[in-house]
Length: 400
Image (tube, rainbow, N blue to C red; front, side, top):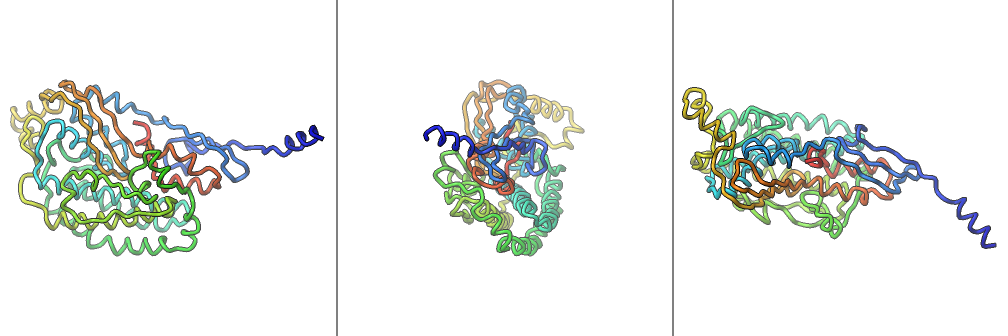
């Protein structure tokens, strides 16, 4: 009798299928891989693989002068690269003990919040596209391009911006730049309301996203979540409020929170954060202080291009700064900013040399992605795609 029961149990064992999701599958939104153990359409187990575009940023940074590291930070979360640039500049300023003019703080806040809007527009429109609603994706991308028009006016670049300087900005906001900013603030809310009406209370969209890829506040904290993915689980942690930088304490804004930590909550939190970013930009533009757009740090702030082209002393100074010939203090600093996906931190050790002795990037995507196998276990394959989209995993932040 016992033998027959054992035989029956063996015959009832499930046959699993192995499915390769990535690294080239278009639904992964990046170059990374998930090996799924499937029971039909249900995900039984997941093994995540990263490293396909590992570029050894941290090792390269040990051999690059401080200014040249800015271009590396562009390629972390390339959907909101100005935040990465300015976070790095603030880290160096913290090591140098530089006092930054109030005008620089406000200018940085404006640019960083525009970058946050662009980042969230990409994420939320792609969630819509992955549920079959492509219209919203094509509709709001014109506004991301208008934000890139602003970046281009400020620094001459759009995606990998290399924006700003250690000690401030490369140049002041031009009248053309100010006009583009005000035009965006006046025109965008109407179109964003239409995007919201298209998806936020859409019955099909809600049924596809509510309850999908949920994570509790406790589990999110255990993994080290930050940013919208943590706030969607109901934890009100935001670096801009907890450890204010760039005079964020001067601005009135709310921290949107979810309750379930699911895909729909992550979508709605980012929706509300876009509106809060608009509020912050308006306040900053309306109250931007007079003064210089750079700090008094001649050993690190690059001379104006006109002088570099026409003055030998300025050319020599420009070369010395870029090649890391200025004196740097010995020290150890950590500085973080609220990136598009959470706390983006820079831990730097300086031995007084022309390059950092050690530089570690705290990438929020790298941390939140560790929870992905747990979040999709027991769900269907189509839900796994939506969960990945709502986490906004950027491959550039995984492989530093």
